[in-house]
Amino acid sequence: MPIKDLNPQILSEIRGSFAEDTLLSQNAAKNSEAKRYFPEKHENEIRPPFFHDTDRIIHSKTYTRYIDKTQVFYLCKNDHLTHRVLHVQLVAKIARTLGRILKYNEDLIEAIALGHDVGHAPFGHTGERFVSAFLKEKKEGCFCHNAQSFRQLHEIEKNDAKEHVNLCIQTLDGILCHNGEWLVEKYIHNPEKTGEMLFAEYQKCLVEEETRNLRSMTVEGCIVRVSDVIAYIGRDIEDSIAVSLINREDIPADICEVLGNTNKQIVNSLVLDIINNSYGKGYIAFSKDVFNALDKLKSWNYKNIYNNPKKMSEDGKIQAMFNYMLNSISTENLCGNIKLQYEKWKNEQNKEYFKENGHARIAADYLSGMTDDFLMSSYNELVVPKSFGFGFG
Image 1 (cartoon, helix red, strand yellow):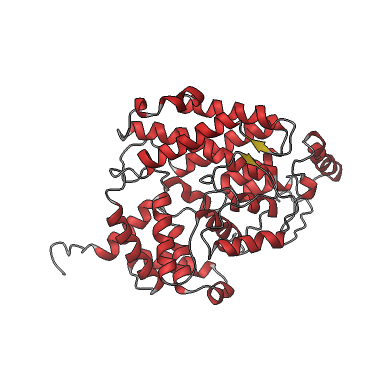
Image 2 (cartoon, helix red, strand yellow):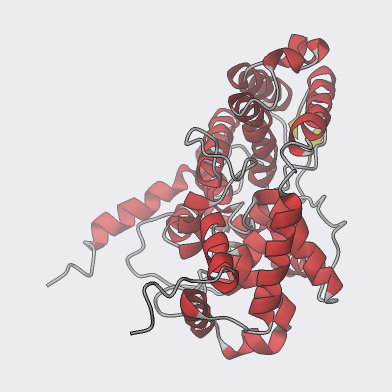
């Protein structure tokens, strides 16, 4: 027979170890303060709540699909390029390093970091723009990946019992507020934010694109947000060099003098600067010189990498594919494997989901959960004619 209960004395000692809260900064999120939208009671729970959140995230289907979601470079046959699954691990590692030194809750940091990008559509930010344009055309709001990450883990993903994942509110808040594209010199948290306020922010993000500069309720959320920038800014440069899009010598000299010109140097410079300017304080901050250099580097990356005409040369075809698939899903004009998979996904949702969401939003939810390859193979299945072979006999 499986063991169902722990020895009461052992369980008591394990739960007593959760009091490691006392070793954290006074501004850190405490395990004892963790809250969920749907209260739970686990008689034999041996995991602190935020640690438990990490397990729930990595065992989710949406986390599994990280494996084939591209970061910046799609349609490139190079196995050494960063994919989404590696990016979130890099964010988690950098954020936990900062959290450990600055004495913040590493369990919460890891949960936020690993879950923060599950809402990304196929083809990264390019796909995000196309999904958002579709929703706006259909007058069903807009799409931003941070809100979709919240949505995936709070509303769409179900466990084996078809129940919500039910992450802690602090974890969901860090995920919603993680936006690494919005850079600031000082990250200040909002400890007065409630679960109701958080949910209102999430709902606003579904209809207004200009709501991305959100303040996390925890410093841990601020740490993940800045770690997102640190994780991608130099790594994207290395990937760009690998695909011959830029040369290292192209990076402006004044930026290199402050941050370096390799991913290793850039990460180290930014992490040490944050420690120097945040240790013992209730916020996360850069020095002015380092922030200015980072801001310039981010702008340089956008011009020379993300918006490089060579990288964007196939975007017209990709947008046509997105539009075709979104319209096909919203009208349920599907066949073959894509139809079977969509029906399976629909059966996992409850009746309220279909009452509360229009056809375009449902299509956006389903397509945004796809991997790059599954989207392309589904498109081919619906569009490209199939051979009859030697005949019909």
